[in-house]
Image (cartoon, rainbow, N blue to C red; front, side):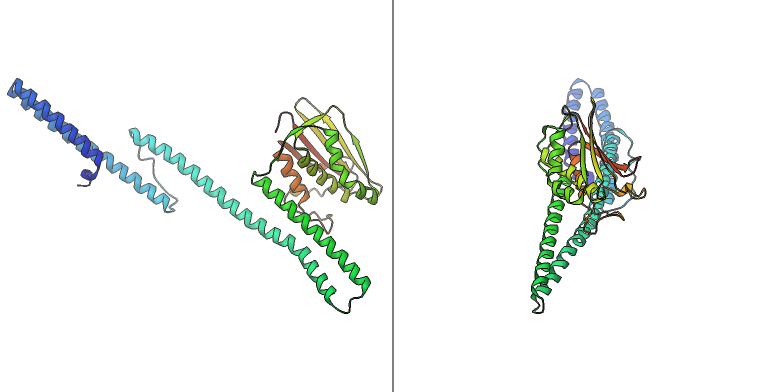
Length: 335
């Protein structure tokens, strides 16, 4: 009998028999009728104990069978039939666990596909500068290449290496942010200081392109963010605006503080966005039809990752008067 293999059942039955025997002996000491009554009552209780235990362990066996089906990948299961007592509570908790595990499994599958797509995109992005470097080195190795051509090829290799270095650095930063491994050290910093740090590396490029940067910031506005990371995020947005603003154009940064958030609005006088492209502006490796040939489609994606990791939000739209507009908000108290 399978039930006798269960140590819990054997223990309970042994305790019952000991108590039953003691009660029967005591009753027989009183009278034969009392002893006989105790024997009948004990026998009835023993039979009920065996039947109830069999029923309970059979239900637990069926429940174990359903769980085994689930573990072996069967999509359908029926736990609702276990609707009595403690098995009902166990069934409810197991159903919640199964739903949570399947949701987690779906999320892991989605992450796996996303990782595969990202690796394919990264491979494609790195292939272009590597191919350029390889071709340039092949030409440099040719004895027919004159001095002027060698200098030109050397400059091409230098540019490709710089782009390759930037790509790898940006991809590593995005990966660290996605994995939650980036060490952001928030502190209170003036918005004017943050914008100045973001615009400083672009000063020469802005001058060469003939693009003017204007700021309308209040000295009293401050945000609690990691200055270095957020300056890079703002710098990537400013760089995007610069690349799409023609000579003689303007980039304007306007700040506005409220009790809830500090808002930065960055606008340019370029052609703006195609309305169909707006939902994809911040997607990794996305390049609009007006993008520069050297654009990798990473800058805005990195900017969004940094701003969101800092507890802020960013969105892109077309300004009413033309040109692109980026609206960035850092919420007070967000870390």
